[in-house]
Amino acid sequence: MVQPLPRTFYDRDTIVVARALLGQYLVHVTHSTARIGRIVEVEAYRGPQDRASHSSRGLTRRTKVMFGPPGFAYVYLIYGVHHCMNVVTEGAGRGAAVLLRALEPVQNVGGRTFGPGLLCRAMDIDLRLNAQDLLSDHFFIAAAPRIERFVIVKRPRVGVDYAGAWAKRQLRFYIRGNPFISRP
DNA sequence: TGCACGATGAAC
DNA sequence: TTCATCGTGCAC
Image (tube, rainbow, N blue to C red):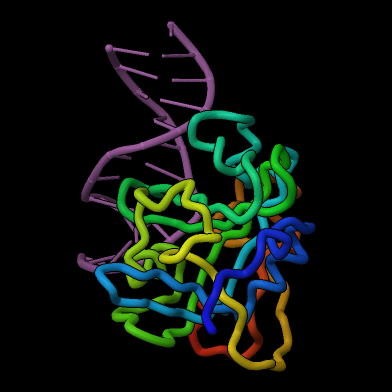
């Protein structure tokens, strides 16, 4: 039975959620086609104090979703070309989220899925899904169908060199040895 | 109202 | 290393 992970899954410390998301299944149903990808790489964005996070700008029209309740999708356009998808974590007002960086194709996924932009393209995710509740029937994350055992690798996040000391924090997590990681 | 700038990916 | 391309945040 494929169903969304509960709100309580997202309502926890962002690093805990980031690690727990690895191995889970992202599901997007469009035109009665269910696209499914296994999450294999993520990054944690901790809140307003995290200089790499969009929420470090405070509460704005764009970051409103990040400061909202957990379990919602924060989707934005980057470089005017690609979309990136996050899941909001922790309680409302925290401004924390987890960026999905790579998937392993499971079902109805065409094209490459490694890298946040390619992931969104392959899963047909765009701005229309911003602020979408992930406890829905067409866009959600489901528990992995079976217990899997893997080692989680920690690395600094990608593309946030401007963030000072926060750029050095190991807030990127991925499944060791998985062939769909966006970069070593 | 204007403008510099990306949590990227692809081409050169 | 350069560039596409546009929403956002902040200066004026």
